[in-house]
Image 1: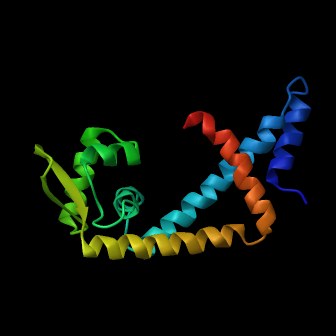
Image 2 (image 1 turned 120 degrees about the vertical axis):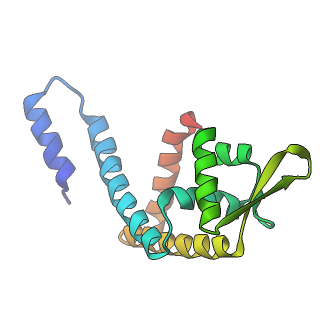
Length: 161
């Protein structure tokens, strides 16, 4: 079985036979898969009327478990965005009725961001659509190979954690 990356590697090997192209075989495929995943995510989220950035915040709140609330600082750590970006995102999510702010009972100056029932419905719908899309991307890969791939990718990602 051949793919477009095989052709890319052959072309580079012709032009740069002095280089070890092994990383290209891995990372060009990961890059192409990431593009397909990004398209699948956008389609899944569009069907649920949620933007990717909205999903990231809503999903962090949903994963927190009932009562589905986090401090803005915790949301920053969960979503890896800046404080100013998070403030803007929470404002926009609140305007859509997906989240609400309330005073932090443990810090008079702080607030808690809580997922509303509308937000919970939206993130659950988006996540269900995303899981279906991701299953479709993996359909041709046997379960054992999926598990092996997950382990290998974990090995590559751990140094960044």
